[in-house]
Image 1 (cartoon, rainbow, N blue to C red):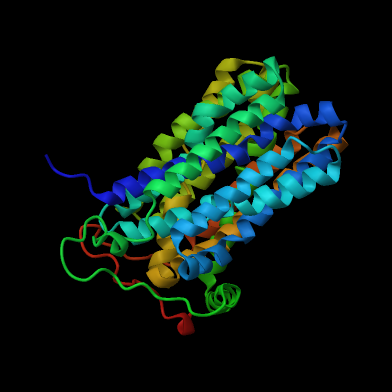
Image 2 (image 1 turned 60 degrees about the vertical axis):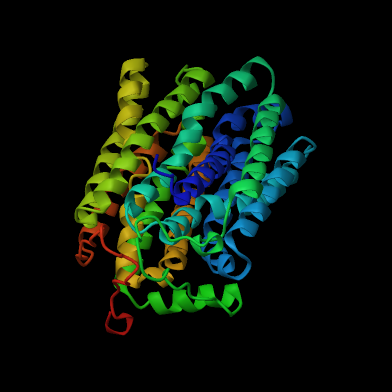
Length: 431
């Protein structure tokens, strides 16, 4: 019987770790109304705390990518998980609005940063040569898998018991994640005397040792790639990606549905359904990104997402579960399908050595967009007592993102069966 390559063990541990971090982040939508009811805080205040979290975990990405090279992947994952555990434990003792801002805005925001930003491309680059796009698609889809399994369960626990019991379940998952990381996680194939999956012979790709301060390294790379138009086009499109996904749907979808008479459990079930189809769509997107022009993939992803968001207010106004299911399936297929093509374009444009930090900066734009949507939608709700304008505007912005990506310079399709550690990058000085 053929032995399973250890890269797939690493992928499984990282997959579960991202699920845990993802459910912590996406659970914010389940907790908005309970926090509002229990503590008497305004929805805009709660939304602002979650917006800080979205922004911080995004902006931390490039610095975390540089820091991994200094202290190692396993230690970084352990520290990030411990930070999340501290945030969850402190949640049980919060009583003031500023506690929410500190715990869910800062601690959980920073703790989730590694798992939800640069971890997927870093692991895919280090542990895979063949099937890299597929591995990236699987890891990217893992945030949706957390929603698939747990969001409806969390909503049921909140509805039947309290938000504290739901938080207890998240605490148990976080402890299990820490145990898996401590037992099975390795820093690189070199640590176990192996090669990345798909590399049958020859030396393991040399890692570039980051000897400088991680903050300095991250900014040096930013200043270098800021000269390239492709970086700004990817960042702008990803700003809109974040605005139209985790910032809006992830934070406000459940509350939006409840405003039309749907129960929290029903709305969370729709998010779960999105998770099912996002797992399919994003994994398939990773496979497609190895084989087709990534610009056109992104163009269609953004345009179809925009159409679905414009459709949502009409689906909810009709009060039909059928229309809501149609939206959830259609939107779910596209939720984070944009990530594999975006990472591929970044790797092909800027080279594999810098691509993780570059993607960290691009993802920072994603989370800035998410923060704008999380906070802005809360303000729109306070003014209009409805989220409809927020969702319609997000749909229109998605159509604009489609135009941003289609003007990118076409990149070569890399042979996934070859040693794709060879850098495919543009001359930054000429762009």
